[in-house]
Length: 335
Ligand code: ASP
Image 1 (tube, protein in one colour):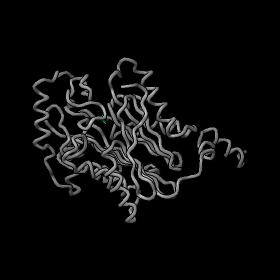
Image 2: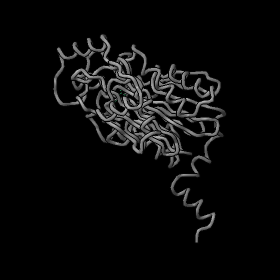
Image 3: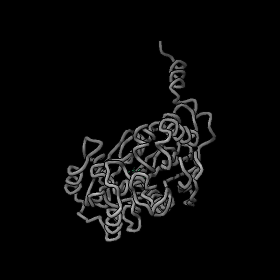
């Protein structure tokens, strides 16, 4: 027979109720976190959207659109570095904490991949559209055609072509796999992703993640960013996580789903991020030498966690007053 006690015991066994009850009191008001230092400007836009009465989805979408439109940012949206055939292709996902998900992968000729992802969520029965179908859907939805390849990004690609080992391996920021030599993990020219997580006063949450992926990637390559449970995962009452870095290493362990599962089992966002990074390191050994992977997590109480493989992963935190700080995540390995 099911009574109240056995239901509670069952929830506790699943890790759903007890761990959160043991944590400190919830933060007051809204909170936004995002990956990398350029996340600070994104957080400001997300905060402004919430202040204007927008929903959590409005907030994370508004935030993600900032680096997507920034010509100086070669890792997200407009002016992203192209694939190795010279096409800029975008990956994005948006998610609320009630199972709402929309994503696009290998989207072309459209600046705001995150907004197209939101349309997938709100106007189709699907969760992910890819390639030509995603691009056609964007046109059908009224998103204007825009050439995303700027002269600067094209030049970087042409320079890369001169020296690249044209082998069927993913590029990485370290150059280990034939990627650009002038960029370093976490550096200003690195090809990073923006992942945002937002919570409101009531502890409800949403997230967004958008990227042009790895510079000079194989045509058709899709990283972790648009994949639910890899680049982004949000669960009501538990929290959310987002990732950046070499997407293949995140995808192979369903990285953000793992972070949130650890939080469900009682780990703090910080410990949960550390757990998945250690797991990747154990699993991959020498294969991840010189590779950057970073995770950022937020729970409904406003606890934040961040951890990465190599030094250099920064993240931006905006509190309920709108004050933004850029912090550096601890790393498993030294430089
Ligand atoms: N995670 C992204 C990808 O693999 C790239 C990055 O964050 O640097 O596409």
